[in-house]
Image (cartoon, rainbow, N blue to C red; front, side, top):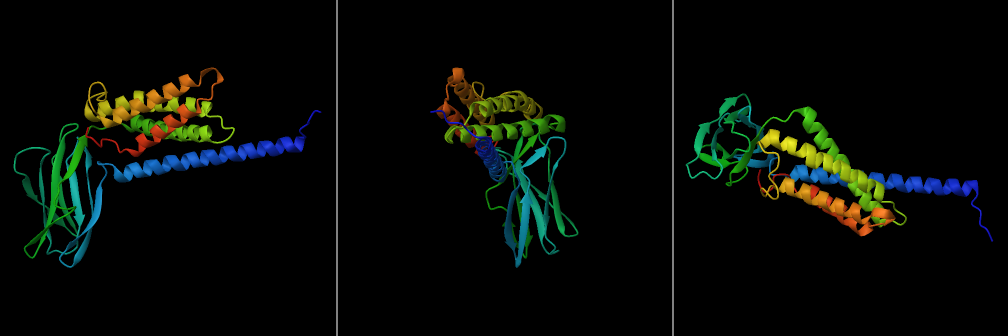
Length: 275
């Protein structure tokens, strides 16, 4: 007995397949956006934000932890009370010397100071100290913040790097989802994930690092740079997954493992172990 699929049934199957594919793309996009936001909020070079109480006033602050080598880093705190003064206390990170202390300038509602520019990958540790009625408060706590200086990376290099890496993450998430759903086809998004991640992480990434910090590669076997090493490990897993999936083999476990590791790598902030 031969079963025939009617045109209506075929269209219904096509609609369900298209709907499932769309849902997987949306989920992959949400996973990628979520990981990017989490990395941005927790990275060690993004601005430190918080609130502190000075006298009877609560001060909101946003203190920089990243700056380019072409200029001093401006530090500003909005506090309208003219009775509050401020100073910057800073030194080169890890230096045994005593910190230097510079008074902050009041300009209307702002207290302004600047940290001297450093060479690529140079770091300062600093505190912002506010005083009123003889009492001094350190914003962001007693432990100094660390600010890192980097060379200027042109937008025509940095923007494609960021965009390609983000698209690579979306395709990696899509491949991982296809690997776990019934009837999924993970091979094609896996190929795209590998191509994008390799281009963004192993070609454009070293160029960005050279411009920012003076070296193309500081990961294994030449160093311990976490950004380089996590890119290298992710790429190695995607190669293994694609090799395992040759000649029509599904290799779902390999692709899922590569996708999970890529997501985990994205969740680890850049420069967590230093530059």
